[in-house]
Image 1 (cartoon, rainbow, N blue to C red):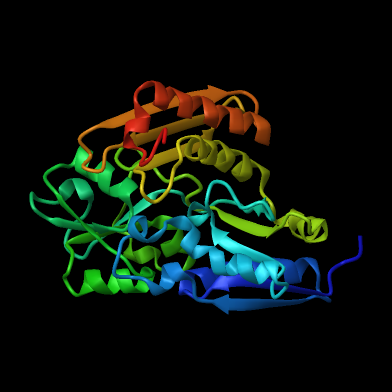
Image 2: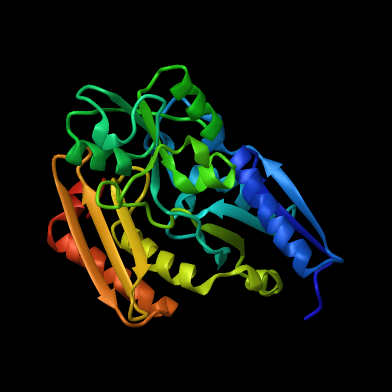
Length: 313
């Protein structure tokens, strides 16, 4: 197949999203020196509506819809996403064509006053945009007050610095990618806040019919990351996971070369939290997907659907 002569990347215009797009742009330029690789910056509905929680205005798809329209009408060839923001089932014309190597998937504790979540006193205020983080913190540290936090990364940090919160919880990956690792006071252990499905990984979306684009970006894919996030995303897919569900799923390699997947789902107030985990020796995408389905079914057997809005309707 001939090398591409021009590729256009659709991206949100937030600082982190543009870093991600430029990262992919740099990788593609290194692969195809004669190719003009351009970025089409866009503002999505999720970026525009900042006064309400994502769970109230439509969830993950609000960060991808406009980018998909640009791909569909030919203005862009691919879109770069934080994988945790990508719906678990893409609409029929689109495909997740590559998953890149994962950055640190853990949550980060950011504060100017305290050293860690565990060190915060009763009544201290923690900000987060994530129902998953909020439910786990409420479950494991019920003496803390958890409040909603919206806006891009810089906006959230500014709210912390103004004293609106005693601490905030962010994805470690975003802080590290933007050179803000020094803002991290502590990395939160998975035992306290299990990461979201796909957290820390970048996904590249294309039209399913554009097999040429998929082939051009194939060298950017990282098979181990793709396998791990496929298991995680299968949990969320089976359980109808969205921004309205406090659901976590995190998969790591085992010493034997297989996969170990852990997942949990909780009530919004953190009063109930269900957990399940499983291992498998098969590490291809089909095996990873089956692992995720099995863990989701184990959670369902414990009553997980009680925490999923509209489950069974």
